[in-house]
Length: 476
Image (cartoon, rainbow, N blue to C red; front, side):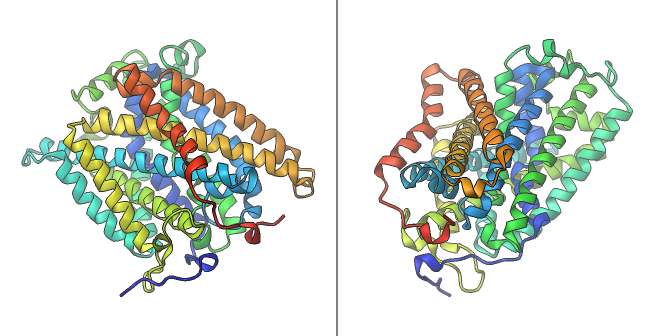
């Protein structure tokens, strides 16, 4: 069955996702177990050790401030597209096109990173249970094919798959946290992570970097606008809920691991994990919940990674769909499948793109965890901070030009977005000044990787053809 092509201004995806469904999609992209098993050891091992929970709190505060302006502007951007749409309305088409390129780079980078992580995790799991030695890329490409199949179909199928996986992984982590708190490690229920001399020791910027990476995808609430039941209420609720749930969950769990291992030992344990000598998440789980608990978490870690990569696949496919509808990508990407009502062709293109990039990294012999996941997460974090910074500036600019729509809401339209800009600038400085620790490579390699999102912004602003006007869809 062929896809249908309809006029650019009439292309719409459909669905009846409620607040809970969208929050599931977004938190699945945040992938709680993935962050705990991957980002947390990185934040502790090469960051600030026992002070890592503060990195998650800083990230949550900055993103909460960002969300205030983001959702306040939502009624005036009545189309899917997230950062691209907001920046285009606030700062014009040229900047909007640049942001569109940065968004594609950001989401593609983190998705490829997760493919590397899940390949490593599956190979590690099979090896732990004395299974056959199969190279990690085989697992990665197998997952890619399954994601391609689900991404081709209607979004509600993906939402159901993600919802089940998410409930299970959150449930086991809450159980693990409770077990740790009820039987703490050698230092007891310590609050040391929140002491200034602890969280400022080491590289706080690294902790903030990997904390921010853990939130990537939360703004996708706006990408699912056309598939939401009542976007005017659903999108703001889902955005705030996602930030608060993700932030609290990460910070509390990170603190629980400090309690379990002790402030003096947690960094060393994390470093051994990064070196391949142990597994911080699974070893701690076994100590608290026994071998059965370890086995359950091991399985749910894999489902978490799968849910994460599926969610990012859906986000990228819809971003391409929206950009094609605006004439910024080939029109074929804006076709809707007649039976599945999904951006099927865009989904297929995204599958091919991820496969090619992953294939290149495999050929180059890049390590799947630190090399693929760590470096790609770094690129994605720089891109995400840049996207949010541009969006916050767009919010300030838009309401400065449309004072009647601001309606005296000074906190939502001026103060919060301005504070978000300051917080994002500080976060960017912390990330960039510590970027060599993330890549583990030379200063030259680190500079090149960190520059990728900025180069994408420049090329997008200068090289792309004019977008189709969105003035008909934006309240002036």
